[in-house]
Length: 636
Image (tube, rainbow, N blue to C red):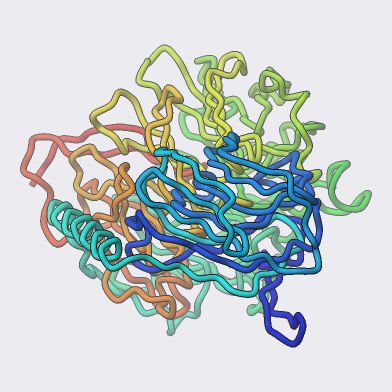
């Protein structure tokens, strides 16, 4: 994603230019900025254009806006003082979609000159000054403290920006920040600390994409390395290997098997893969979508059990008669109602979404892989991640394609209520991610969580497609479902924002009620649930930047930190996997780099309680991360 910011010359002076018609912010990143209460921010700004275009943060935006923000809570909640259009000076409080104008004035601007904007806050009093002259004085207590910065949505320039405060105000903010840090440190003492349990050296075998699975039916996870260079949006173009190659290792780092696959297209790391026991023998098979075919591999040996050529592309992606290039994920579903899921679902699409899916049936014993059905949806497209669930209780899973639900035979059952009226945001409207299950704690209902892009978050009745709750949260991108609040019924849904409001994490109850929101950084869109203590509370793993790297609770507090994490460390560059590895149901955190696999576990055994939390994760779906509740007897 380009920054749309550049340093340019203006009258022989270097200034910062925002050169796009989009919405961007520069916010103070110093420690303790959230505790800032009384201060002043001043910036010299020049708004060159008076208009903008609709964007992910403001779909229907047309008026240019440039100014300072203060007492910033997150990218959708702050005070704003600045220039609008050709001739409006405005002081406003933003709360998501609501811009409450606190004061405004008609004032034509000279787009060739800079204006010194200054906003001062003390208690509930807000003053707005232009070129040293007071224009507004208002009182508003909605936001008592917060960071400061700049925000613009049009072609504009900034020549200078400063934040100043008094010594008493600085000392007060520092004291508040120190108190919060002390509370967080005390809270962290309640959680086990991460320690390295095992470190596997990959250099003898070569780097690649890693998955974990029980290949030998021992109940112990094995490590599968798909060698070569991974590819984000498809397969068949991975680099680094002349012949696809896979290595299986045990947790001691010793090889179980190594296989090459001559004649198969694409480096193995570029294949779409899943590990799942498809025949009920206790051993995971390896399902793979390569550059030219679907494969089912024997997990114990790596040998090919079944294969089928990839189909011709659908009507919306690829040239007529060309082979489809499956994207994002391969899914293992159960549309035939077998004791073990053994149906493979592939999809087309790109970053703007997809239209067509293909369903293949794998028959164990006969080692046969055959196409059962295919289906194409029109508008709206489905997004990056799809899902499956037995909604009607007949033992066969329905397929959730974004806003669409398909029956087990590929027929459309419903389109999300109002789906035909969904706006086409930048020509790419889709449901970015969808999760399904019993979320609200009522066993008689099944809910669907939809991260609907710039349409926000929906909670949907899975039986009918009717919307139960809708929240305009900005561009909803990521989903994570887990028991983040064990004091509440059901599960909680974490919705992470992306385009236009990166970093906002919104927590909802399983019934769709908003519980909390926080913004750890301006990069993350969430992370997987982690069963760290085994007591029923799940945490959220964030790895987007070194400043937030660790496990966070539902209140937005980092309660577990990992040692030696920096922007240059391999933890920031490789894969991160979350699943139980060492023997008890608590999760380990597995970091994968080009050179090694490092497994972190807890520095203490689980509580001696009779039960230990053991949630179910459907690895055959993978993303969005969904953790379904469960307990096991605690065996020491």
